[in-house]
Length: 153
Image (cartoon, rainbow, N blue to C red):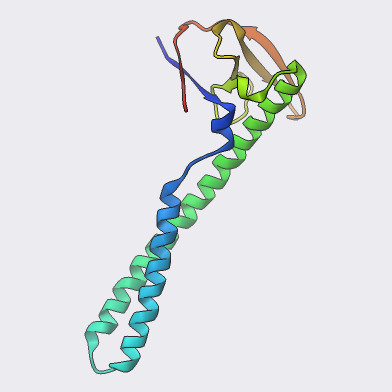
């Protein structure tokens, strides 16, 4: 049987990403190394090792920037999807007059067929049906085949 994974409301609001922070630090350190190396290169024009080191550092920084741009686009897309799921949970919570913190979804993006669960209770699991224009939804009570669920924290 498949284990159903649910993401609580708090998880959907925050998407930790220490890798991009590390890449920003590396880009900043690389830019600083480039500046220092340019100064050394200008002071010692006859020593070629500084020039070669500058080329290596520039290539490494450009590679890191290229990776960061791709990751930034992916993170923005994931963040938008996660925020849409959090907004859906907020809307459901308002309709049901409960706290959004009591809800969990089985996906970080909104789509027809996603599952919403109230209070970590398998008897309170609903399927979301999104209208074609994406402006409205319906909740339909559903039953899980495998009653064991995992909750991502």
